[in-house]
Amino acid sequence: MVKSAYPSIHTPDAPSAAMPAVPNPRRLMSQFNIAFSLMSIIPLLICCYLITVKFFTINVLQGLNGFYFLLAVVIALLGLLVGRVVIREIFQRLVETNTKLDRLNRMQAHFVNNVAHEFRTPLTIVKGALDNLNDGLHGALAQEQTEPVEMCRREINRLRRLVDDLLDIAHIESGKIKLSQEEVVLQELLSSISQLFTGLLKEHGLTLTMDVLEAPARVTADRDRLHQVFVNLFNNAMKFTPQGGLTLRLRREGQMYRIELEDTGRGIAEEDLDRIFDKFERVGSQESEGSGLGLPIARDIVELHHGRLWAESMLGQGSRFIIQLPASAS
Ligand code: ADP
Image 1 (tube, rainbow, N blue to C red):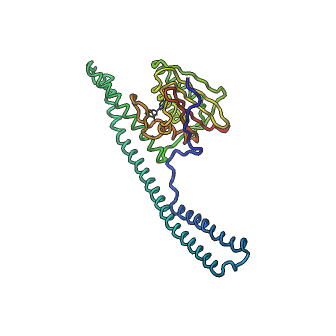
Image 2: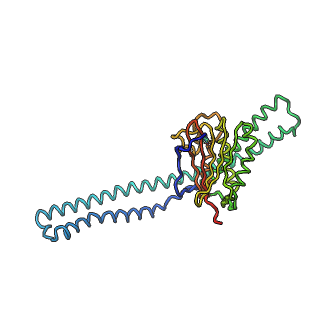
Image 3: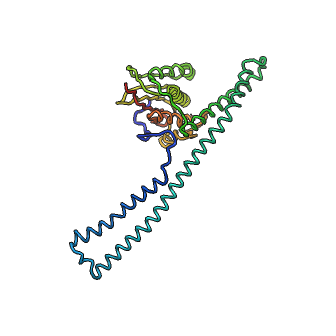
């Protein structure tokens, strides 16, 4: 059984799935100027304090004392001026680099989107033709032909899934994804998903334990997208659990619902826990197929619903994926 004290990786409190907009560089520069001017007042105030409060008299500025005082003020002002120029330059470079990175990110998302689109149509055509061959639409296949046709169908399906994942990522990152807003009862969604996996779980000799809240757990969400998230988590749990089983829990925590999918599988090393939500990251031995895009997409979708998705795990003992979603205001 999986222990409860897993190391965990948490998402930030106010997550945002879509690419964050880069702040206006001009606004940033004026904010910097204001901040620096305010900082520069400090030595001036210290001077005023020394003269008016500490020594009570302007006489303190006479003679050698006054010379040293003036020298100190000049040096402080020069330091401020030089410091301002240097910091301003560094700041400006950071703003420029940030803007460039943002542009590159958008170009990359655009490129991935275009390429994936271009791949999709021919893949659909090839898949249709292979399905027809397999269904005997062009005559019965000889025994030695069935295996290569089946292999091609498997690979085409894998490629289709990859292309769909790439399109999803591109849509999410460019902020183009549109979520529908329906009332979803989590118990219904989770039970339909568990039914979907009943056959496969049996085939793999795995059990599924449901520990689900009774009162209807209503959330406002895009049903299909949430379905996609849970299917991905179930698929992973099954892929990486050679024996034992899965446990699905649903609880209410204040204004949020907490859904946990726990498995008794191979687990994830602590140092890998934060990486598995990055694009194309796959950890541990990779004998199973996968693109490394499922979890980043799942996290993005959950965050677009103002929720959180994170993992807790212990190597060799199992993993737990936790989703928090805001309850509908009823
Ligand atoms: P993939 O298509 O490779 O499954 P994901 O983004 O869904 O891509 O998962 C990324 C990686 O996270 C997986 O390759 C695997 O190394 C790890 N992982 C995900 N879920 C589990 C799990 N339940 N148990 C162990 N490792 C997992």
